Length: 265
Image 1: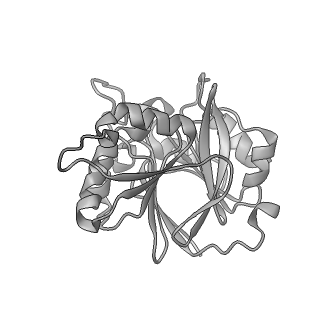
Image 2 (image 1 turned 120 degrees about the vertical axis):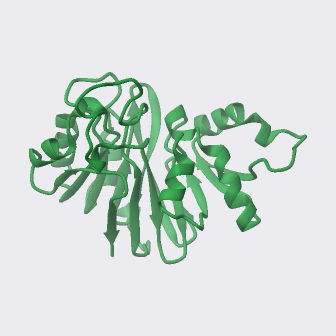
Image 3 (image 1 turned 30 degrees about the vertical axis):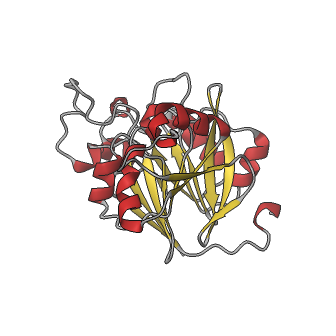
């Protein structure tokens, strides 16, 4: 496809830092069977991934669980943060990038669409104030839209999807595509996904939702696009127990779980 002509992509490892929806799993004050489960795969931080090549490390979204996610994954080096959209469950941990500022002695490269950058400037106004106090995060902002861009040795193709009326960015890196918080993908953006060997796609629950794909809708999208291996993320406690749902899925379709790794040569 034209999008990928002459584009070298290194081998990458993708780690699921979180696979839960905005409330996480278990959900506060909930007494359902999923929230009471002792299975580690039923414990879900808010949705985020870590993408690593031999030389470059990128996080997609800084969730409210960002600090715990970085400690759990033992991340010592982070080159950039790439945002999908500005909802709180995807940006709330942004302040904690300051640890990487301290150890790397440089601003954090931060990528987002116009809407996301506007919200970051508002929600974290102290970062962008003319009068800065010691210890606040240091960032370099990059405005991205649908045009491909490169971080280190990792080329990234944005894919615009819709979260009801909000534009959200998914990302394709070589044979890997990551999409969260969507309930519609326009045909021209679907073309960017076709040919992926691995697709990560949001699937909130079985019941219909205003702005997220249901499990069956996500299965239908992946099937239509003929993706050979699919992982579902942004999962709520309403989905059901991990092992039960996972065993009911088509071959090579899986519920992702926190800490899971995908290796793409």
